[in-house]
Amino acid sequence: MTKILLTGSSGYLGSHICRFVENEKVFALYKNNRPASEKVEPVQIDLLNSEDLNFLFREIKPDYIIHLAGIIPSQISNFDEKFIFQMNVELTKQISSLSHTFNSFLIFTSSDLVYDEGDDINEEHPLKPVNFYAHTKLEAEKAINKYGKFFMILRTALMYGFSISSHKSFFDYAFIQLMNGKEVKAFYDQFRNPLFVEEAAKFILMLTQIKLRNQDVMNFCGFEKLSRYEMVLRTAEVFNFHLELVQKESCDNFKEYKMAKNLSLNFNKMKKLNFIPAPYINNLKYLKENFEIYKPFLSPDLNKM
Ligand SMILES: NC(=O)c1ccc[n+]([C@@H]2O[C@H](COP(=O)([O-])OP(=O)(O)OC[C@H]3O[C@@H](n4cnc5c(N)ncnc54)[C@H](OP(=O)(O)O)[C@@H]3O)[C@@H](O)[C@H]2O)c1
Image (cartoon, rainbow, N blue to C red; front, side, top):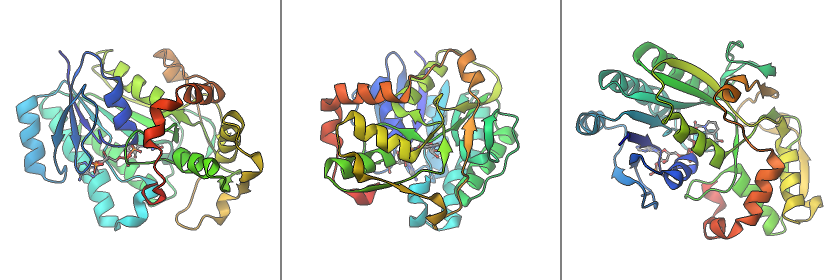
């Protein structure tokens, strides 16, 4: 049976991966929030404790390490830069070295934010991170290239879909606002190729079935270029919320960190692997049809988003 170490298993993406596990033996690493899925074996660890991490690799000798744990943009203001660097870069460096030593294939979620702006951005496109988070993701990629052996770096776009963990997303935030009849301001002038979090989880598990033994980097995204404003507006349409609650906001007004405005990704590599995401509207309809699954997770606690 394929053995997988999954860091960040209690996060937004990780909890969906745990949900879709089938035949793999998944060791689900978490720090504070124990994963609820019965399909995985939860392992509590502070990943910054390098001795514990070494021990885990020695004990398990994983075939795959899916490394998701890190500090994401919505959390960045809660930590200082030194800690964020430690979590996003130093930890990735250690995991790369361990994956090398134990011949484990490393799957890492980087970000589309490492790129310079543009349309049809392929994996050879110039890199130009414009904020500290993006800079740490690029440094993490460099560490993987230097210390890793077999790996796939996934330059992941903004993800959408309901969270089934205590880590919430922009999508949850916007949905709860609309559900409560409150206004949502969303950027109309920033474009990404958003990826459905559940498809991302399934594609990552499919990667572990392909038995890759190489070093690669791949854009990991949906096939449509959308602004957050369009995303929220379509959500309101599908779920029959009042459309006037969705307000346009310019990302120029966002002062917390600098943002790239146009990151429209080329998805040829995904197509070659037969990773074909469904259109945004179809995934919204799917979420509506299956709403009972997500209802218990729709917490009104906006602080965690
Ligand atoms: N979300 C997006 O739209 C997006 C887009 C592009 C790329 N990405 C990348 O994809 C990855 C996953 O994102 P996400 O949104 O799923 O993240 P998330 O929801 O914020 O989850 C973070 C995870 O990291 C774990 N963690 C944090 N510090 C830890 C520590 N010291 N020891 C052990 N575990 C620790 C948390 O565990 P506990 O909850 O147990 O504390 C949690 O499981 C990240 O690398 C992110 O940069 C995300």
